[in-house]
Image (cartoon, rainbow, N blue to C red; front, side):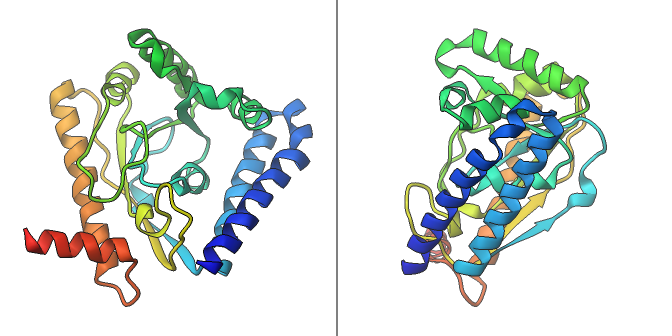
Length: 254
């Protein structure tokens, strides 16, 4: 707990320092701001390893196609929102529009060219999201979306929203599923951080052209199967986080 509290203080101070010190980049090229975003992620990951002992392992980078692509990532933790950024060449994240109204944070999100979605606006929000995503893809960027819309505890039933299928159909790009186990080591809505290795696995791409139902079944099956495997792998490790053990014990009881 002490290490978790120390890391939380360092992480938020580090983030505030980046926002303030990098604010002149709001007036410069977008590429400079994106470089600062990647640097913030790498520094945060370094602090997480030094203070808590949490490392990151990436598998399957060779499966990532070149050029614009749709990336459907499992979302278990706030860790996902910054740690995934350096893995890609020039990602544009789909994010809640209200976050863009936060001073500095929102200004930078606009500078980065992130894709806002106004969830309260219903179908019109999805159409607007697709227009923005098409513009980013036309510029050669990867489109990164968390298809469940919010963080889900490891082992929770999947809840994939229709926006992912809309993007897949409307962009006509390969979709790369991404599995992870970050929620075991950086739990949602808790301050505890656990030592160990967060694994991110890039899975086999899904070619464009499938029907919506077939596509959704494929992407859900690939992500959820891989995430369950990563949880089981963490539970079998020498220093398994508490959540991994509990999930494994529950499944065995069933």
